Image (cartoon, rainbow, N blue to C red; front, top):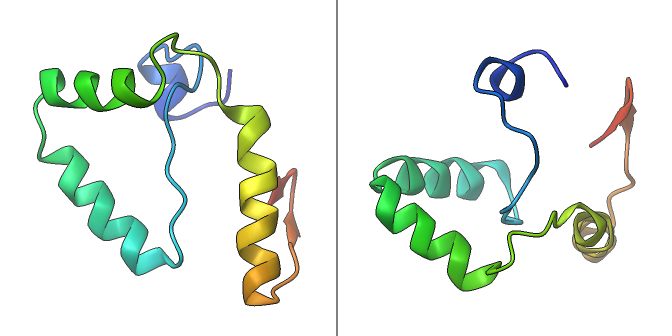
Length: 82
């Protein structure tokens, strides 16, 4: 498990993610989500991922497509592509 939030709160897997066109949009959405109570967050996750499957295999193609649309190459930072 990666040190930080996932280790501190014992988060075993990813069940939800959103792709955004830029960092400002992502931050704005994060603030919106933080304002929701747990029940509303659960409804959001369940509506998009009822089986709570790990969406990681879907992240890379979406990320590549969004970067390709913007004509920006992926940059490797350590073990993470940004």
